[in-house]
Amino acid sequence: MKPIKMLPNRVWRIYLGGLLLDELRGDEGSDGYFPEDWLASVVEANNPPRADAPEREGLSRVETENGVRYLKDLIDADPQAYLGKAHIASHGAHFGVLTKFLDSAERLPIQVHPDKTAAKTLFRSDYGKTEAWYILGGREIGGEAPHILLGFREDVTKQQLRELFDRQDIAGMAALMHKVPVQAGDVFLIDGGTPHAIGPGCFLLEIQEPTDYTISLEKCNTKGEKLPDFLCHMGLGFDKMFDCFHYVRHTLPELLAKFKLIPTETERDDAHTVTELISYARTPMFSLRRIDVNGAYLRRSTHRPSAFVVTAGEGSVAGVPVKKGECLFVPASAEDFTIQGGLTILECLPPQSETEE
Image 1: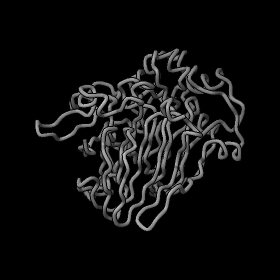
Image 2 (image 1 turned 180 degrees about the vertical axis):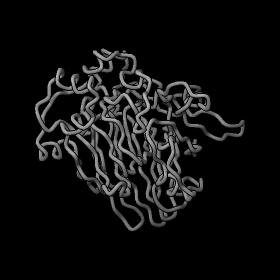
Image 3 (image 1 turned 90 degrees about the horizontal axis):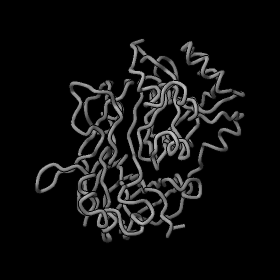
Image 4 (image 1 turned 120 degrees about the vertical axis):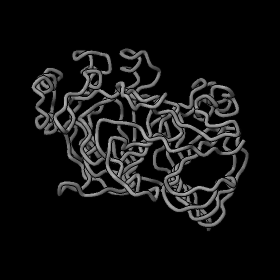
């Protein structure tokens, strides 16, 4: 079995963006309400009903000899070939990770995602939504450089946050958090329970646990239009949603030491370099590596599933032509294959299996 190229998979969100994603793929760009592309996704988007919503929005599709198929359906039909015995033994017949391109033309809502404990208790889910961001680039918007809001900068109680939410004091909620500038190459790992918001002008690859649980503190979009309550509480109601937050204060040095990661080069020769961006030592929930190829690099089989996301250059992977902006799913049963050309690839790996510990 060979790596499989995914079709583009833009997903509707409540915020504007997508220009830099269009430009990455060599298209004439514009900002709109499809600012994300879900890459090798087996997760459906948690969106409200829309007249133009596609069937099974969020799931990646693949062109096959028998027509277009969903990646999830291919995996479900032969999980051992796609995921491997070790992965299935630890995580069942699920890829276990979700990766996205995300380009924000405006600040995303102040939000939080559940950790595994809260996800199990509140959503009856085996997965929470710890996530990580690898900054690909950005743009200045409204005179502001790309930045994120992250973590509480002062002591905050559940009651205090609820009162600010009830008043919809967005400025007051943002003032509780650190404002952190970002630039290309930065890596942030955001544990479930940590309040955050991606600011305007951020272009990034996000890797996360495979859910779409987002608790939002904002009831309206940036136009002031009221959003469905479900998009705030995900069905929990306005009381229980505050159980998803970790009410922990960090100084800025503490915050950066905990959440900003330092990439580490692990392999190098004349044809390729591998840099570990997120290791299993930091989180068992996923791993992220950057592979830079200049020439021909023989990729040995790992007997593990992964997603390859091309962020620069063009060439081929196992004979499949690829260019920047494209994504492939690499089945666990894939044999050794060659990566050729001048390429930068982000390898997105699922949760650590017990046999890998």
